[in-house]
Length: 327
Image 1 (tube, helix red, strand yellow):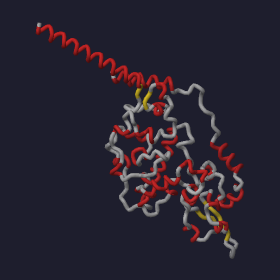
Image 2 (tube, one colour):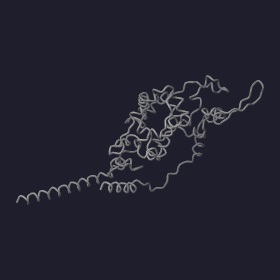
Image 3 (tube, one colour):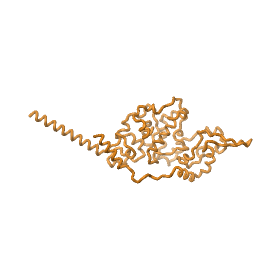
Image 4 (tube, one colour):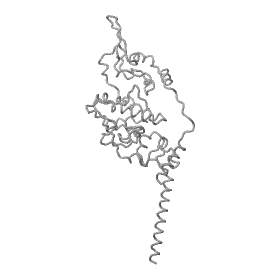
């Protein structure tokens, strides 16, 4: 019977939560970039930086000999112009964050070691961003295992030249999952980057998750932070990354009627969505069906009534037989 209810739930969810209005038409990648460049009042000024940092090579002329040389740009200093003009900071001037000394070419070596701003240097001091709880995010981060890593900063996860908010700005949850997981894998799946911050041995992500049933499905459908952070009701995306020993490993944390996914991955969606139709954790049904987490309340009640009725019939039948034997 339980299997039957699962099948019915899946079928109903397909009917109730399928968008019949067709695909949402969005601006193309090139159109977004072009629009942002056209609306950035600093675009022309930024070209002075991007003429070198937007390419894999750069040229400079020796002021004494007049000879022009071409050199390969360090990969860590190459900026993807298209990504920048689609990022959260698309409207900024390079010198909003970088020293004016960079206007001098070539920049001095000391400039490369300038202290980077943290996200909270701007966002936590502007009341326009209070709704995003950056101060709470900072508190969480300081309690995170990442805060104990020398040289770690907001920039390691949120590259200011390319980072864009996806959790609250996209209708495509798969896109958010892929984007957010790639942030983690930038270090945890790339030993070249990982060893810049740690002396630990290389980690094999697949082997370290051998205990996880159906790895591929989990990696594709949830973010790393669902299991590796503490839930926080105040902020949209938890930033308190836990030590690996404290990572979630109990299936029932997600596969239950009070699934933690409602407070993490699906937090940005309306929790009321679909609940009036009788579903528990109905918000999850907008995107997927998670065994144990999605239920139809009316079917649950009906199953209890049927089970109770069968039990009463058995008890009544037993009582009649006992009475007949005694008589």
